[in-house]
Length: 87
Image (cartoon, rainbow, N blue to C red):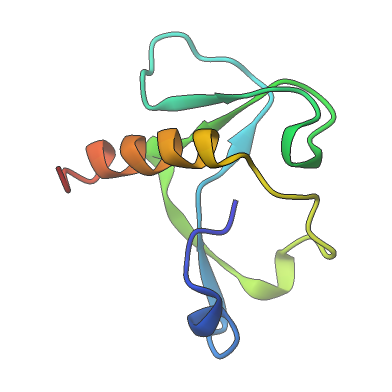
């Protein structure tokens, strides 16, 4: 999931992302669940908010699968802040 700003993404060679996995890891509270179908994901998944990273924009999937709900985005935002100690 791309989390860097669209304005920045238009000019940068890489983008900031939160990886998404379909493998559940119950020990990490920083993994936000995403329902199957939400954001165009075919199966239940988890946002790995403890692994924020950058990737080259050339490896992104186009067109995007979809958008996450504002509730899920809020949970991801809070988990990223906790992971980066921004709270």
